[in-house]
Amino acid sequence: MNAALAAAATLVALAFALSTLDRWLRRRRPHELAWTISLALFALGSLALWWAESNGWGIGAFRIFYMAGAVLNVPWLALGTVYLLAGQRAGDITRGWLVFLSGLTVGIVGFAPTRAEVSGTEMPTGKDVFGVAPRVLAAVGSGVAAVVIIAGALWSAWRVWRGRAPSLGPQRQVAAPGRLVAGNLLIAVGTLVLSASGTLAGRLGKDRAFAITLLVGICVLFVGFLVASAPPRRRTADTALRSVA
Image (tube, rainbow, N blue to C red; front, side, top):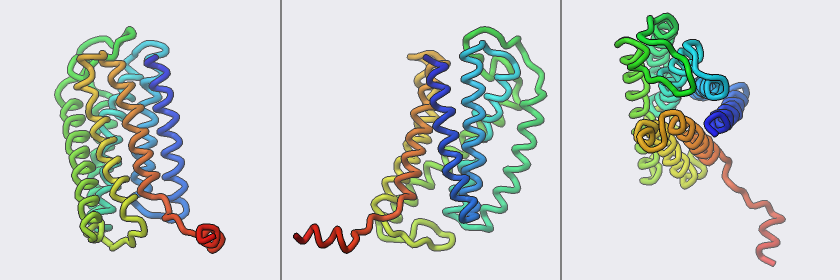
C-alpha cells in the first residue's frame, strides 16, 4: 500500500510538473519555472520513497528522499510565491540565495557521514541517520518556505476578496476572482497537508503517514493550481441564445 501511494504521488507530481513546464515554455514567467523545478524535486523525492517501499531502504534512496523531499522542493515552490507577490527584483534576489542553498544541500546531504546503517523496510528518521547540519537545512528550508507559501496564499486570497490586486508586484488582471481565492486557499491547505506527516506518524506509522500526506498534499496543490489558473467561462452567442430560448 505504501509503495502504491508513493507511486501515485510520483505520477501526480510529474503531471503537475509537465503542466507548469508547458506554461513556462509558452510564457517564460519565472514563477512557473520555479514551480516546475519544485515539482520535479517533489517527483524525485516521491520516486525515492516508491523505490524504498518496494525494495527496502538504503542510504542512497534515503539521501535522495531527504534532499529532494525534505529540504529543497518546498523552498523552490515558495520562490514562485515570492515572484508572484513581491515582484521580479525580490524574486531574483531570493533565487540567487536559493541556488546557493540548493548547492549547499546537495553537498551536505549527499556526503554527510551517517550515524547508523540504513536498511530494512521501515523509513529511518533524519535524527537517527544524520548529524546537525542536514537536519538544520530541512527545518529551515521546509519550515520557512511553508510559512511563505501559506501566508502568501492567504494574503493574496484576502486581497482579491477585498477587491484589490492579488500582489504588490506587477499588477495582474483578475478575470475570475472567486476562482483565484479558491485556488489560493487550496494551495494553503495542500501545503498544510504536506506539513502534517509528523502528526499522522504517531497514528499511521512514518511510512504510511509520509505516503498519504505526499499524495493528498500534491493532489490538493494540483487542484488549487488548476482552479486558480483556469480561464473564466465565457458564454458564446449560441449559448446565450439557447439560454434566452
